[in-house]
Image (cartoon, rainbow, N blue to C red; front, side, top):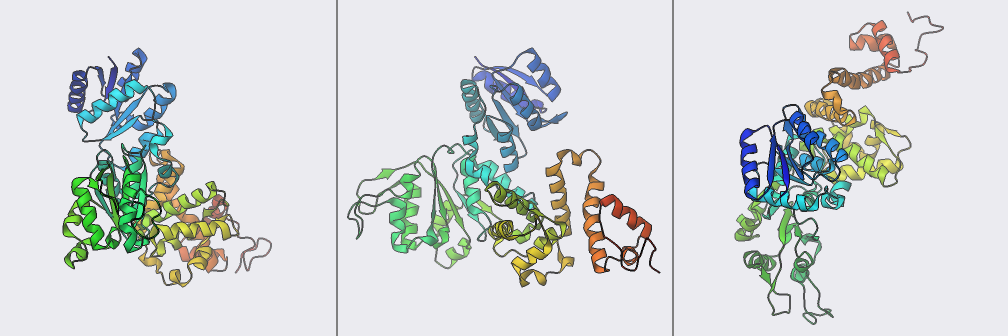
Length: 481
């Protein structure tokens, strides 16, 4: 019999979970706060700990980091109503054995507890997925939070997911996240881009072929369905699939069986299907270019990725992430100046996240300066940024991005009363520098333009450490007339 400690401030959840686990043969102790959790641990370490994230006296996930450090063999299962990809990843990074978004299946929880008790250890790096750690989905915009919530709900089941979005928005990253965070993560993830395969070879690529099935088929070849056995098959650009291949794919989805090209034996494989498209499949159905029955088979759970221009507040986070990623791969480490962030936010990103990533890699290699300014951004993007009107920038998004960066650098800043001064400080420096540059470094004119006293400006220059050199019209400390 395993002892399980259940921590949740919702009495109903504590009761239901405790009853289910006791029926499964476990000894259960309950607590409603981090304080009670610590008191229980002082009495004795359980075999499994189950805890909610939001507790009345603190963040359960942050506390888990301390617990897994103190008790490295204690498996922890995280429950959370915050059904976001971020929470799932935070749970893994904190050392959790499992993460279950609410509402959860009690049978799934019971199986997780049994597995955790038998294993007696924490989640390994392999369970997170190296690809997800290396290049995770980034973004705190409301649009991306909606995407995270859908991902969190489908990682624990095998429902077919159709991911829609413009080219470069990260559709394959979503598919990989669903696979890497789900129960099939140890099995293969196999991707096939329909647009990159000659139409006459798509069926052979999907289902494989026998020797002699067509000219050049010198040996039997396993198709992507067989290669993905037990794991996930990701069909990218599904809207480019020819009609005859659509018919065969539909039969496979309906029966779970297929034959190779040139073969007669029925083959059955257990594969989860994820599909993606940058086309409007509903419009293709209406025009007769895509099978309606296949569309409904694929569109069980739809996920729509927003273009980058519709989540400008994520641009700064993404840009900094890509620069860090480039540095970790051996490229020079670079940072972005405040005016560079403004320039990036003014651009419409027709190539979406992929274009931003490529730009950051080019800047990491080609920029002469450690701190990248707006001039470097504009030089790379050319005239496409020069027509951008700063008045049309998403200012709320800019502030959100700034707050997100402050939180990333110092998580306590959002709670220690320093946020206002931090945000104003970030805005004040580029404002003063821009006004000084516009007025030829003349402090008096720059102060008048900003509506402040010149002495106030001089104090702010000293405080911020802005060196303007000798002011035009000023010699030996004598102010200009």
